[in-house]
Length: 441
Image (cartoon, rainbow, N blue to C red; front, side):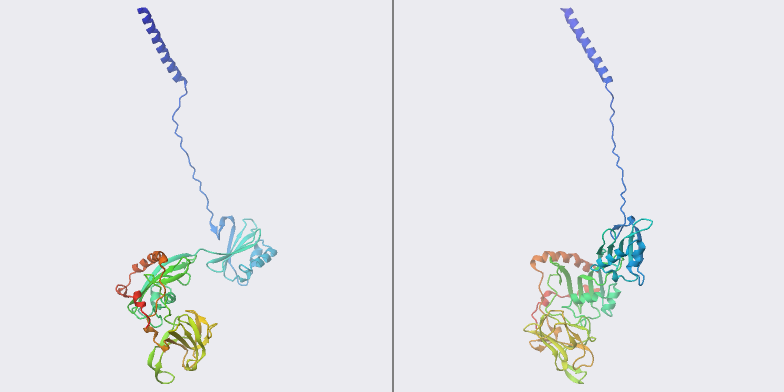
């Protein structure tokens, strides 16, 4: 019995040893694998972006640039670059509706885009009539003509100043285009008479948008985004608001319209030579007589504007007034424009006119000794000094549009507030809408 147990033990031990030896042999027979780290190599490919010339890849062509010589025709230019007479003829016909080749001017730049051959053939002719527009004449395959424009950049800037001698000089000293005066006079046409109300010590702050051409030059004129003008201690503020329909108007900071029933003056720019005066000395009659209007010095032919909407009740000659236009604005107000040299187109008795419309031209008809405009403002049939009237306001921003107005206002008004100018902007008599809402008297 003991022998049998010891024999079983020996057999089991031998089997165990055989298993261990088998495992060792098996491990050695399998191939060895090393952990392999694969690194991904990314090649950076430089993609060549060709320079664009008028929208074409310049390095695909032989580029020839020059200017048109005096008495040089397009055919003379193109014939040197393998363009046939028939093709030139077809081009001249097809271009008439877009940009007639007969309009090409001397000293204007042109560019030819030609094939890169030993004998280059013109495939495109580009003409620049000005710094913004360029005309592309396609010559290869079928002839096509297109009028294009370079991108114009807009730059917002701001200027400020105080009048020491004249507004013109002050604008120039502030680095602004003096023509900005015209823009300001239109914005504040219902608040300030730029002919007679300005004083030394008045000041302005203006945020403007200018258009800059590709060559760096600035297009004439500027768009007023916001402005403040202090006139005789009273501050007027204007904020440009563009509604969802694209219509732009000017409002004060509170959204009240700057537009009024009447303009402050019937001329864009002119000097007042005689004010409303019940006892003025008449230069022709040589005696004192009532001068119940305002005289503006203006060259013969200067456009005269109606100060408000209305109906023409007189258009002709009337005694000492000479040629005169009389306009009835409503049951209360009438205006007269006298000593005219002629009448505006369509101005006749019964015709309707709109505020700012040209209704005549200044002259020297009637009892006068020099060309000028005599302007009268009547209330209830009696001549009145318009400077003493507080005119009704225009419409405010609609409540539904007020959030949009406030958004546009808050973008530009801080620009004005950041402009540092002397004392007059620190404590001006700010004009509040309550002053302007008073009933006309």
